[in-house]
Every structure is written in C-alpha cells, then in structure tokens.
Length: 191
Image 1 (cartoon, rainbow, N blue to C red):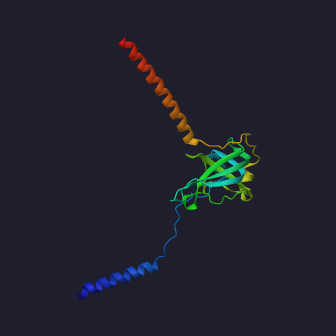
Image 2: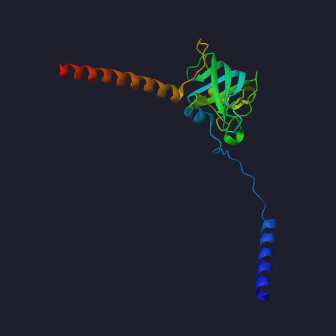
Image 3: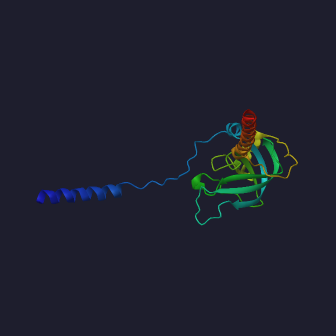
C-alpha cells in the first residue's frame, strides 16, 4: 500500500512539473507558406488589380456564423495588371483571418488585389499579397504600369459555379432533345 501511494504521489508530481515546464504554444488555423515573390504570386493568380472598396457584404445572414463564411467585397477597379475586369468587380474572401480571409478591407480605401477563380467567383485571402495600395511599394515596382478596366459595370462572377451552370443547362437541353427524338422514333415504329 505504501509503495502504491508513493508511485501515485510521484506520478502526480511529474505531471504537475511537466505542465509547469512546458508553455502552451499559440497556434493559428491559417498558415501561409513562406514569402512568395511578387512575380511568383502574379503567375499563380487569375487577376491582379488595384481598386477602391465600394461595399463589403457578409453573405451569411443566418444565425450561425463562421470565420470561413464568404464576404463579398465590391470594388471600383482603377488599374489592372492581369486579366480582364469590368469597372465594378466583386471579390470574395473568408470573413476571418483564422480562416485565411483578408479581413483588412475597409470601404473607400484603395487596395492591390491578387485573386483567383473560386466557387463564388474571384477569391482572395490573407496569403495572397492583397493589401492596402499605399503599402504595396514592392508590388507596384515589380508590376509596373497596368491598364484600365473594361467599360462594363457588372460584377466579375461565375468561376466554376458559372461554368457548371452552363454545362448543366446544356446537358438538360441535349437530354430533352435526345428524349424527344427517341419518343418520335418509337411512335413511328408502332404505326
């Protein structure tokens, strides 16, 4: 009995000592790969542009919210370095930086945006070199002079969702035509 008590006491002391000896490490759910050059990030993205934020809209209006919920940021595009964009363009990001969303957007501020096509449309995040235009010295030096947006006033949307919708509609039309032809052929064969 005495040995059992001694072992339990020593185990408790070791556990307490271990908990005091090791500090908890702070972790983040979002972890960006080391620094990527401006040129490398430019090559990875679908569009690169500078623009003024006109509005920010949280797309989840439900009771339960997550840092991963998409936020729509509407821009007035002023300068483009890659891609074709209308004057008014929407970009999506996660609502919180813990989900790698860029949460530094503010209305009426100018940003440089590195974005790619995602399910909602154009997407950007914390790890994509998107930042205030006033802090984009390196990016502007590497990118040089851009060009203006197209004259359209609509949002750049679609991405994979737009393509999937188009393919789905085309598939339904083709299926309806094939069914119609088969029904007509069967009807002729019976007469």
